Image (cartoon, rainbow, N blue to C red; front, side):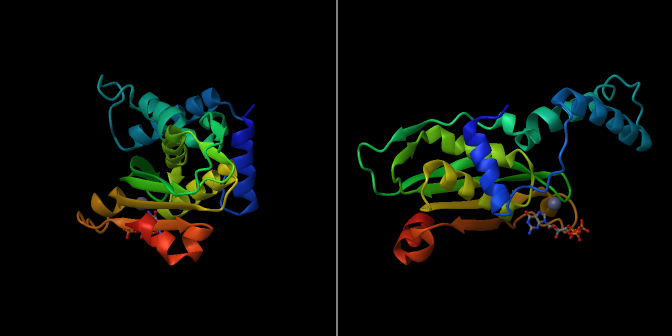
Length: 212
Ligand SMILES: Nc1nc2c(ncn2[C@@H]2O[C@H](COP(=O)(O)OP(=O)(O)OP(=O)(O)O)[C@@H](O)[C@H]2O)c(=O)[nH]1
Ligand SMILES: [Zn+2]
């Protein structure tokens, strides 16, 4: 069973065509762990590494656990954070902005790290979101194989759906280790992405206030 909030976010992402491409599966987390552990035993031994060595013996177990319960745990809506929303009794109608949210994700093309910072803002309407929940929503979607553009959009849409307002903005600045530690091997470049909704898109001043 997933929470009502998780179901709302999932259904909104599906309706907007922004859900991560997922196939239906009825495997439990334990079944996934066992299957991945077996497959990684093949990978590690095909690379010629000795799984009898005490340093390597647990590597398939560690990676399977890491995929299912850590870095890809956001594929399972049962891990969606509990969301606390309160009524906007104080009639806040100015921007609430959370900056420097630590973000560690995984590039879906190479399964290596994306390391960055996110900034999220919204202008409350009837509901106010518990502050830490913004960080937790960022973290949930980061814990999936991702492209940065989709990650940025998914956070936007989740917060729009939960706060029942379009006036949400998200930006991410990140280093992709698939660019830094392999391939083109550029150690200096970083990538910025932005997703803007409502007044953040239509009003240049609001956009500028968010981006500064
Ligand atoms: N748009 C976008 N591209 C990404 C992201 N993460 C990785 N990529 C890119 O995905 C592309 C995959 O390109 P391919 O040519 O199929 O893979 P590749 O041969 O490993 O490419 P190189 O990285 O150039 O060596 C690369 O250009 C990556 O830099 C992301 O978050 N967003
Ligand atoms: Zn990559």
